[in-house]
Amino acid sequence: MSSKLHFITDGFVKNNPTFVLVLGMCPTLATTTSAMNGLEMGLATMFVLILSNIVISLVAPMVPDKVRIPVYITVIATFVTVLQLLMQAFTPAVYETLGLFIPLIVVNCIVLGRAEGFANKHSVGESALDGIGVGLGFTASLTVIGIVREILGSGAVFGWKFIAGDGILAFVMAPGAFLVLGFLMVLFNKYLAKK
Amino acid sequence: MALCLTVVCLVCSAVVGGAYALTKDPIDAAAQAKTTASIAAVLPAFDGVPEQGKIDVDGTEYVYYKAEGAGYAVISTTSGFGGALTLMVGIDTAGVVHNTTVLSHSETPGLGAKCTTDTHFMEQFRGFDPAAKKLAVTKDGGDLDAITASTITSRAYALAVSNAVKVFNQLAGGQSNE
Image 1 (cartoon, rainbow over the protein chains, first blue to last red):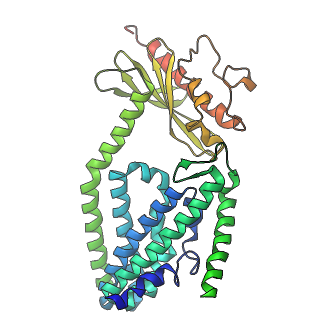
Image 2: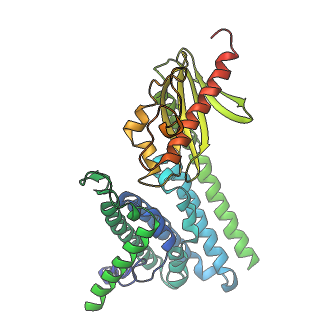
């Protein structure tokens, strides 16, 4: 089992969905206005990613090549819908903040990308680990972007305000998302190149 | 090929259907709890369950909740800076605004979105008597301080409350036993 742990670390570092693969930019830019929002979005995506990876690696050998994409999308959409219903029922407040971006997980390139690029060629266990790894990588990236934007934009971390008054508003809005993402991407890849 | 896709779709529909059936009651309960909480937040304490109704005022349909002995909670939507701004406005039996709360908005974070956090702005509506004062921002000759740098949002907020007062007047005026 320990030999397979690299599937998790790969997803976290080498295949980091945000800073290396640069996938799923829409939710990354839109939902990271605060650390908490980024974390919640990451966890929601991870849930879908793990389950869709498992199911797709199970059904992949039986699915003819020509219809594989429709099958994958159907499977992913099913999990997203289930997640959406569950969130509406049990965490309505979270559902309200993330709103539109939950159904949009269906078209998140990370989920389909891992289905097409990994899960359909690997075993169930490996696919589950890959889902966990990439999901954690996505969650961590979104949380870090959220933390930076929340500190600069609202002077707070996870809602805990430590700088009084208004922050730099631009960082809560779209331009700040691009700036923070760009700088973090540079830092991440600089660190990777050194290794 | 077609068979495979059909089977996948059937299984997926069954899963979604099952999830829907399981979560339907909790979702309804959550929505209900939210409405009840916002009604309780904007009206004086009352007993019993508020009665829901609809009324047409100036060509717009409003949903309101009548709480016996406490007054009316009116859902009022106007156009803010970034989109629809929906408020729950509580008006007591004397026609005085008891409190207001934002149900949904899409105002700019840090600017107009302060309409949900700016206590100075929100407190102005507590106990606001529309008969004695004017429901508009000072810039428009009214008696409300606008949120700094968010005049459009403040105007929309004031308009929503003033529309709710109109709804109340029609509701209260139409009932002789009130």
